[in-house]
Length: 207
Image (tube, rainbow, N blue to C red):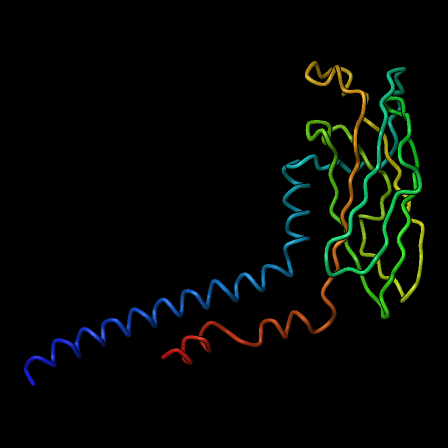
């Protein structure tokens, strides 16, 4: 009997350690699930505040200065897994002068069998140009709901800040790419469903 007591005490210590690990893992898992729903808007906010990753700027009005220097702007479109949409620019590229206000169109069509809502992230390449790329109007400012099979044209109104011409590090820039990626927004009730199980429930089951 004397030989079994140390083993029992040690086993209890191991069980307590396992329970602690279960609580931590449960918390991390469910925290990641919750964050996944907020990832897109949080990423947008982070990029817009910091200018990270070629995030463009939002302007209230057009520039009052137009320079002769021209830059080609190309357009790119992507759809994240989970959103059954066809999404593309209606023109592949345009040539614009610095400060010139320009409007282009993207097209989105839902291939889903039910209503779906998308939200888009965006950036400009090269990343260093993001701070000079100003959008006055853009579909990316709001969520985009589409009925099954519905197709819409979505405008982007922008200009490139003439101040770019004074940036010596960008004097050789001749082409810019504006890129969008659409993500599906969670349907009503999905966030609550994902949060039904809690870390404390998981820990109780393990204990």
